[in-house]
Length: 589
Image (cartoon, rainbow, N blue to C red; front, side, top):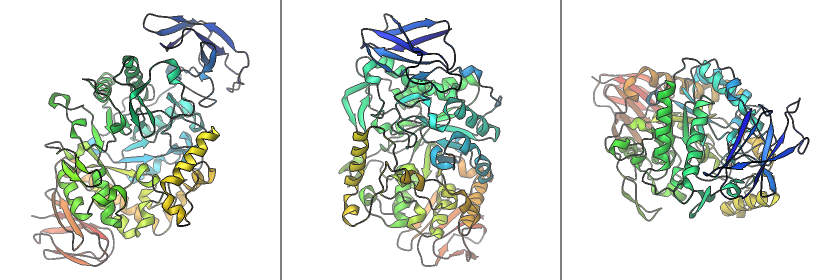
């Protein structure tokens, strides 16, 4: 027996269209389909009991004679965003992670990856094949870029339209469960990137069912999701249930919530607060800690402040200010939003205060921006040098290793991994992978594909005029160029970079003072291009210039624990650092 239910206040008639399970698991559209009318309840939920329907049944809904359309809560889309939905029995999967509990977020080292480019196979199974290498690296949390059903077979995933269905090209529901189970077997937690600020245009049928979108607001990517207008109660429940799905049915350990600055909600209890409360309540029920992490450019600490103190109760948020200041310190770039950062001076500010813009005037925005974080621990913030956006939104998808020498990358790694924030690495960063991470799509709608292609060229018109070809997002070659080459890890200079990352992560794990949430003592000299920071007993010193420097470290009680390259030496109370070198000191008296 299966009860089919769908919330749909807009249609006046809904029929369930159903196909029996196919022996080979592949359903031919239209084959053996039957249609049955559904019954509308007072709450605009339509339902129908079908005794003979079981797992593997393909189905959809016709709305006032149009369709069939996929279920808004489709658990599986084996034939893509325009195909029928498929029923899934989540209880049938045999898990082996009983008793599992992740490392606390403050002790985490997060590793962000894109399933399609992470392995040669480009699937959940392909990710499993590399998990032991992540264990050797020392990371604790694997963060998956969006894995929901989206157009075609390749893409970043931020244009997803079936938010309850793992992508069929990656391996579908069982593939994701096997990946999570394999991670837990290796003591790796799993975070899933969710997109609730908009949905992709291709295959997006939600508006036919009900008021899932609002005309009050507009996002850069399309209509805003309706969290505070008429009919929003069911939309909010849709999102909260989506959060629970990944954590309960797929055993994930947390969520990374995309671009919360584009989630518009003037409700007294915002959807972010509602999600945080649901996540934590579910964690208590399941007996394991679950977390919700926001991506935000608002510089608003209320996101992670406790509800009792006027916050939303999320567990952490990304800190773009730290990344931007570090990037400018390394590259000197002054384009776009980089222009508002001065490099080392603002990097020191970020290490001390978390946000650079904590109410300070931003020339880029032409207004004051942000708010001080107050007494919040630094471990409520995620720090990074690279992520999918900061690489992929560049015209050519260059990683930091394409922009600065390997020595600079290693020095920056010490600042990220031994800094006060929860560190995040982007897949391949640990060996300075040569593969770019470019913007790629696989839209089946030719008009949409043409619009995306033209938009990308418009965005980087200056490069186009200079004769630099901006990669076509729709070309398969753009996707293939972005695939990691794991064989690089064994060759110079990549192997040396990998070993440095391993040593830094091991050092962080062995020194609780590095992840206790306290703010470090920071000194810096922008003219001499060095920065020094750390809690009592540990000091990270980085020379972010080409010239060697003698840097005073206060006394002669320090000992040199790590150095990113040869030539670092302590002479009394002076640390001698070659250009583009970081050193880690212990002791200090």
